Length: 436
Image 1 (cartoon, rainbow, N blue to C red):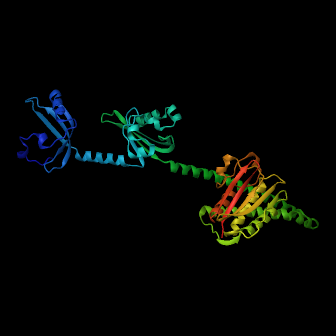
Image 2: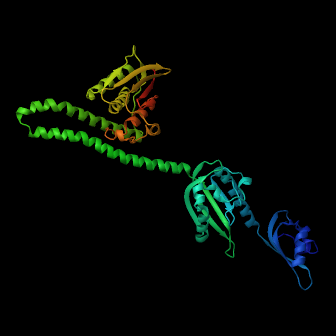
Image 3: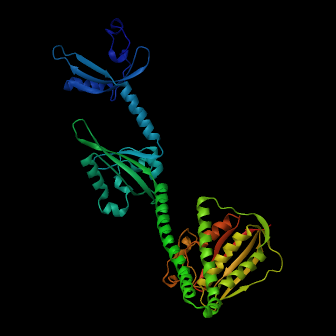
């Protein structure tokens, strides 16, 4: 074990020969074995070739002659593994790994714990780990309950919100393991925590998206059913009409049938565009065109679809307003904005459309005198598959696709769609595209 021959070792003072380092000093160990007849401890010694080794030592008094018998067992590999593990634990930054005493007080602290929870080692050692829980969880006794479950079952894994030193919260995946000595006595707990906030938020986002899509499909079914009911009703009239009334029926019904067909076509086109956006397969043109001419065309389309109960006032632009983008997609955006302005404005009100050149962009604004957007709803206004739920909008047709689709189309052309202002007296939306 040490490399010395019997001839080299006999007669030497062992502590000098092996350059022994004691945990509490040689005098303390010698005093204890002399007094109690026994001493145990871990020593660091040196082999003949100069390499160090760790030993678990036992000293006992020989009752026959009073000399000290020393029995050493090498544990170098065990100690080195433990030190490597301790170094690994201390340096891990993605996981908070620390020990608790049986009462739940923090007994060790690694780099991951410092990074995730925000406490320096000297700030947290000795404090109850309940400090990481929300106040309501502390009041309900959840920290003590978790330790009790780990004590009873050996380990506990769970997820939940935890609190950092600065008061911010994060979603944590936690594992608590009860630690016991060879006699089975509880000596404390090992606790591993990982910050899963990003994954939890993504999980919540996907769940919300699934709920939104379900609601969206219900809305689409309703929106398609409405024009189909009208078309079906007129077709039944055609089937039952005689030759004498067919001409008059066609004169009265064709405008309504055409309007409902256009409505269904717009809805299907929107669904196709949204699907392409989601798949990343949408194809946008990039060409120079006159924004003013596109705005005039979109206003004409909106007026044709309106039943005449609104007045769309277009402020003419004195010259060409040349921009770069996809004219058909700009038409889609403006048609959606004008359709919303008509749907959410009272009958007889004006809708104002204006254009301007500002900086490097061409701007189109659409202002209505509708019910406005509630402050709490502004954050979700452009969300996918989301329709704002308000009692006064319950009977207004719509799927919640228009604004999401319009903003995405504007942004993918290098521009944007924003809500400029909104009040109970109306709202102003602004579309921008880069100037040519």
